[in-house]
Length: 439
Image 1 (cartoon, rainbow, N blue to C red):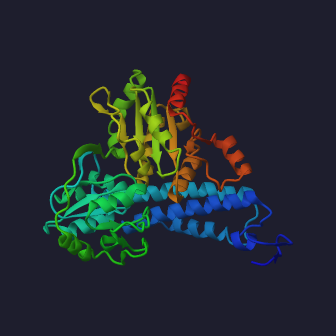
Image 2: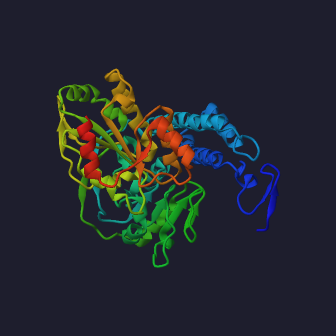
Image 3: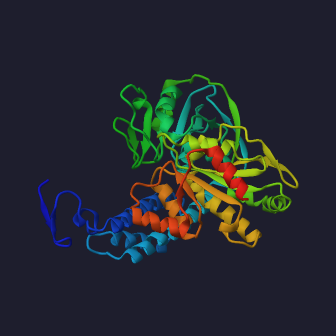
């Protein structure tokens, strides 16, 4: 690309300038805020998409989304303070979107609750459903009822088992697999058709041979797979029958489904346990997982949390910490697992509601609670959730494995000063010990 002249910068340039990113290339902090806003809007749009499919829409949210995108157009906004206001408003609007999504799930899928899930492949033909979209799973279960085909969840679809309207189908047999970054090997081993409903989906490697049984829905697509534009899953069901019985694998049991309504049902006992010294701290450990080095920190951190603490987890980040026996903790009337799986990244609204409820019960601010947030991040929905937490004034969040590269030094300084946002450490055990000493 040859040299070009920018009227706003009043200089010639090669590469990125305001005509490409919407803000003068002389100001990296404005460009950084625009990127934060755009990534937050993308994440919010993903949540909005799921909510809309469940019948939930909000004109105020739609209007904000348009206004915020307009603010990123070339030569519209060069004021850092007003753009920062839009970033915080994106967080507030995303909270509303996550509430809509939560309400839609409960209204359509039934009131969620804890449930024991079988993990592994059982006898008979089977279909594996990955992604996040519960509507796709519901339609598949209804269409495949009575046809002798088992259905399994994968990755972030694990929380589907907490909903009674999905669990009532006896051919929803259980769960198979781990976090999204392992899907190439797991899809290869599964042997039956795979239905990918949303992100995160990976392009198969050259040595993978599951493309002829790989199906995606709507905008989700990979080269060589079959993209379904409607919710007619007859071709997936037919393929499962053609392949026939799958290879049975060893089984294990796990307990999931600690939706925020289930946790808040124990709020009275939890408050009394905290007052009695039986619970010293709450940890929120989870978020979006990835494959790069540094993410083992979250497993080390969780494994070293004391036995008188509770861990709340959600998102695919939970797969870093769930394969460990944390034991149970005694409340006044019952014992509950120390690790409470609250669901998908789509269920982040629930973790926020638990924190707000505890703050209300103790008559203090969220930042005054014995609460630590250690969050893994990877993609745009994680940015949207982070903006929601910041818009609520939550401080002291530790983010990893590294802070976002699109945050400029000056914007990072602002976030550190205002919200005490920081990176995770390098030694999970040492960091837990230091936190517990602080009380």
